[in-house]
Length: 416
Image (tube, rainbow, N blue to C red; front, side, top):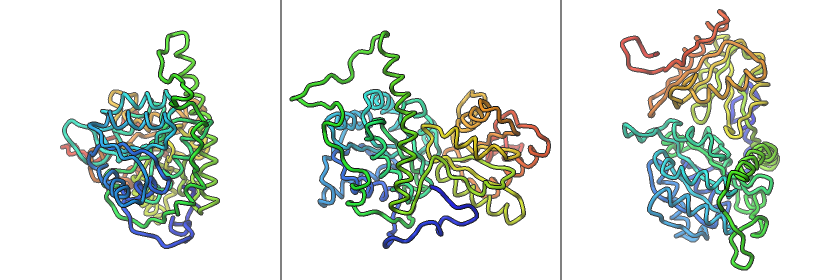
């Protein structure tokens, strides 16, 4: 969400109507209701279950006229959502963690068949050991599935991002599935102020398209979907997906601007925070961004020119926007909540950011940080300490060549 620097977010949201108290799960369900979704395929898993429960209650109460499909697994949930989309229906599902892993096979099928499914992902750590708390390991497993990926920082963004997701996914120049994340428990079960839209407003912004706007399953006009892709054609299909993902950049940008024009909350690929004069900066994702903002505020009070960049759209990756806003900082860090085991740097977001800068010839001291795995608490003082590391790197002109794990229980201290 676009923010005027040096001013808190609350000053940027004009009051259009009465706000309500809602969790992230509530917000996701409200967005599905207001977008008038036709088919919802659900299978419960912690901490996603309240989303499905809320939608089921809305259907039972007559607030949403949709087909609710109770399936036997997440694999079936995504299969049903893809099949529904293939008939021209507006379809939705939600999951978390191991559920996402079980549907992983069908993630590729959804995008390869160009079915505009929208999914909410309540991010949660992956087993083993069994863990039901939040990190971004599950989301990072989707990086190469050809899904558009949008991260949410707060409850309002969960709602707004999902509303925009339907318009983006179903755009004729895109036709790719979209996942919108909300941090498990941190957003899915936390109550915040939410300013929802009227259903008429949502359907005016993201209208349901005529059934025949793309090839769909229709007995009267038969088409073949999902045929064998032999070597002489398979690559062409993959290139078409790549081109659709590239084209989605324009649609995502236009959608975010139009949303802001109509409702006062404009969205982009990234959100810079105090970056106009920042000397050191951290790049991050999701609800963790609020914590990093608090650290930036504290450091600014001490006279430190700290800044932050929140990545809202992770796929397609905002390389140009990110390179531009980071070009003049003296040292840069990335805070990950997932591990890419055996990677050149073990932070998956860190590798994306570093490659973005490297191919553009932008070099500066760089540190990869990982914290908050499996729901481990991250404190503002931890992030302040990361900024102190960046100040040291800026002074020495040297990068830290290994990822630093924070908050670890160790005889050496809490940094590994």
